[in-house]
Length: 83
Image (cartoon, rainbow, N blue to C red; front, side, top):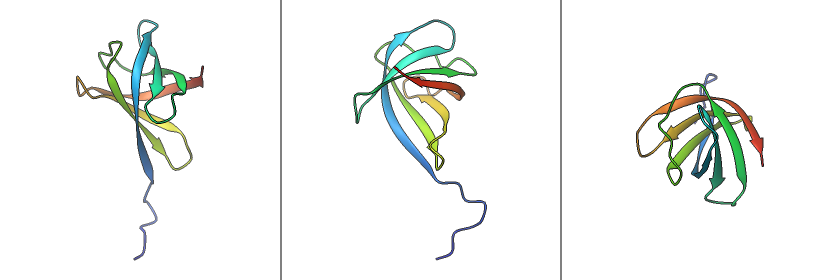
């Protein structure tokens, strides 16, 4: 099977919101590894501590989208740092 040239591989990873910095800046903890990341994003997703969020990561390991599973809201990720 041939893969189309415009195909972009993506992974989805689950996290839990652990801290709200205010605005569009939160800490999230990986369900798989326990690592904590600070994430900034472009528009409100209605995050609350304890929410499960899904992060879409491209094949270059760039975090591109965050989705709040409780609200269904999503936003483009503008910054990520490991805590």
